[in-house]
Each structure stands twice: as structure tokens, then as C-alpha cells.
Amino acid sequence: MTQRTIAALLAVPLVVALLVAAGTQPLPYVTYEPGLTVDVLGESDGGEIVEVDGEQTYRDGDGQLRMTTVFVSRPDADVSLLEVMKGWLSDEDAVYPYDAVYEEGTTDEENETEGAVDMVTSQDAATAVALTELGYDVEPAVEVLYVTEDTPADGRLQARDVFLSANGTPIEEPQDLVDVVQATEPGEPVTFRVLRKGEERTVEVVPEEVDGSPQVGVRLGTGFTFPFDVSVNIDPNIGGPSAGLMFSLAIYDTLTEGSLTGGEVVAGTGTIDPEGNVGPIGGIQQKVVGARDAGAQLFLVPPDNCADALGAPNEDMRLVRAETMHDAVEAIQDWVEDPDAKLPSCEDVK
Image (tube, rainbow, N blue to C red; front, side, top):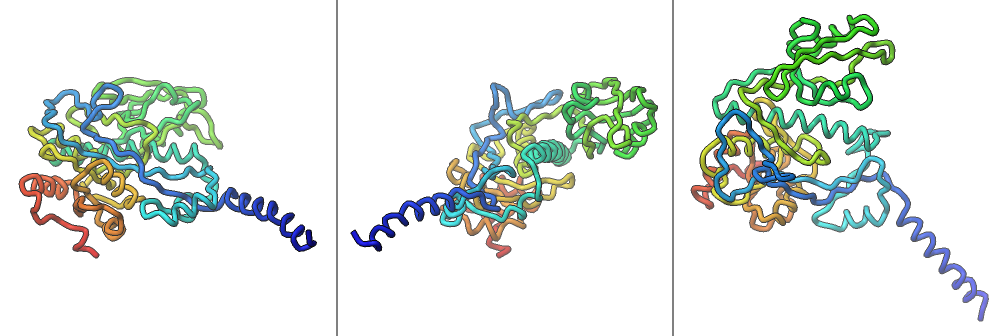
């Protein structure tokens, strides 16, 4: 055996080791894959996903309104070269630079908290838009978006509590509540009057000093007071604001006679603001694929996502541009009446 042959044989394990190391070494990328879809007109854990207390509801037909999700690698995940290459080579997955998705130093816990806050905001805006579309009066209010664990508010206040007053002071904007809490003497409680699921409650919380400032441990935001109670019961592991449009459509459908989708499967995505405008989301191509695989015939697309949606393998599923929740309702109704009807199309904004 020659020295060259021996050297070659000795080099093989080293090359293999280097390839394995390169394939498993964490890289600064985030992977996107098609996620699950959920029929928000259906049930979860034995109960309706959209629940209404205090108003007539209609559970008509077998139609589906499916929210779509994306499997996104977590902030603390180690994404390997093999995973990155798989995403690059796939026509259904995607890969993005880490800093295009997450801020440097973001933890899984912080990401989950932001997702939970976004979900509360999204569901409340969706409810407000649906009820406004149906002619109900909806008023803005200050509410709890998130309660931090192991803080004074933990176990006393809840997400979606609407603040009516604090120590007798009416709460009309978040700063009103902040001012009351910061004016409270150390060790003294703040008496909150809140609206929780349609009932007024009195809750006392003793603030604690955090960085020299008294706090109770809640995230505040703009919520609403509704004429009756509406809740959307989604798996808490699903976070973010991107299902706002589909939540709004499901609430609208639940409160109106007949099936909005005519018994067919409609999917979509998009944030919703209190005025009913549909905003852009991430992972549109993966959501199109998820909806296609779930059997949807129609997919609602935020206008700003149309160009990317057209690049997804959607087969014969129609991609409809949804500027507002009202536009989405009209498009679905026109499609149910005539599946070949001309609808707002993503092709129009290429």
C-alpha cells in the first residue's frame, strides 16, 4: 500500500467528520414550513371555537372557514445547514436570515409572550369589526392584554379584563391607569373596577416596586366593550395576529343565518385593524400550501402579500385579494352564488 493510498484512507474519516460538523453547526437562519389549518367554525376540546353568550347564533351547514398557520423555527432553535438546504430546495418551505424575523437576543419565552399579546389584540379587533359590520355598537376601552406570571396581578386580573375605574378614577386611556398606580403609596392596594365576560368585578392589587416604579404586572392595550360576550377559543400555542380576518368572518357567520361559505371550504389569512382593513402577514406561501392541502377552494390574501402568494403552488385554488373584511364577505358571497364569478384577484396587483 503506497503512502498516497494510506493518506487518502486516513483523510476519509476526517472529511466525513467535517461534513457532519458542517451539516449540524447552527446557522443564523429561520425556517418556515406549512403549518396546520383550523376550521374556526368548528370545535376545540369539545366546545365551539367561536362562542357567543347573550345573542342568537346560527350553526348552519358544513362550510368551513380555515385559519392557516406556519411552522417557524423558534428563536432559540439551532438551525443546521441540512435544514437550511432543505428549505432552499423546497418549493413549499422557506429560509430567512435570523435578523429578518427576530431581534437579536429574543428568547422563546419573549416570543411566546408577544404571540399571546398579538392573539388577544387580533381577536378583539376581529370581534369589533364583525359586530360593527352587523350594525352593533362597539366602544373602545382600556383592557389587559397579558398578565405576567409571579407579579401582583397574577391570579387577580385576567387577559381581556376591561378597566372601568382605578381607585374611583374613570379609565379612558392607558395613561390614566398608569397615573393611578404610580400615585399609590407603597404597600397600599389599587382598587380596580373591571368588566370581565360581561360582569363588573372589583379587584384589589398591591403594586410592587420595579426599577423604582410601582407596577402591577400587566400589559395594557386598546380593547372594546361589546353588547354581548364573544370568545374565540384557540389553542394557546397558536399565537400572533395573522388570523384576524378569519376570526372576524367566523364571528360574522356565527351571528347570521345560513352558511357564509355555502357549505364549501374557504381559507385565508391577514391581520385586521379596528376599521376592518386587512394587513400583511409572514409565510404567505406556506399558508397557501397548507390551505391547498386542507381542501380549500378559495383563499383570501392580504393585498400586500399578493405578489408572493402568486408564487406558491396553489393548483386550482382561487387566490382572492381581500382589502377589508367587508370586501372578503362580498367576495365569498359572490363566489358561492357563482363559482366562476369575477372576484378581486391577486393578479390585478402584479
